[in-house]
Length: 138
Image 1 (cartoon, rainbow, N blue to C red):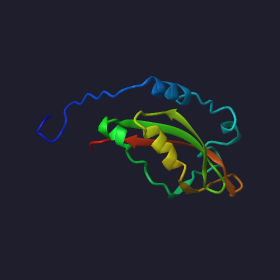
Image 2: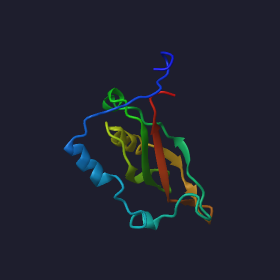
Image 3: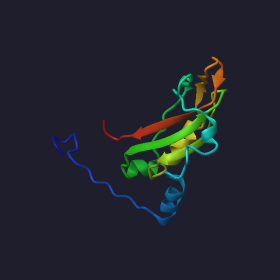
Image 4: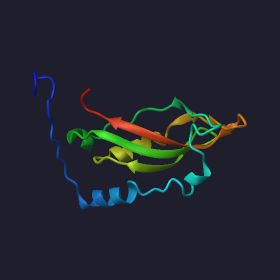
């Protein structure tokens, strides 16, 4: 500890069970974004497509397990934002232990957005990358 308030270094360890390893191996980095259902939808910001805008987009909080283990990092997802502004087909690209990945998916699944618009100016479904950052100390 530097001055009693700021950490100079912090080493974290947490139990990494076989069950967690199996879940992460199954879910993290196994999605082919060029395959269905993602191949059916353009990426937000692609030529002619706008980005969806948040109407109700709360940030995911820490799970008790992740908080006690001092887990920090990013959860990276990809999802389809439909023409009605709903979030569907959430896939994990990078997860975190301690329930943070599940908490992020649960929170993002409740988001409501103003949908993107397509080349014709009408609402369009698009695929969007989503990143949630978990940091304990500012």
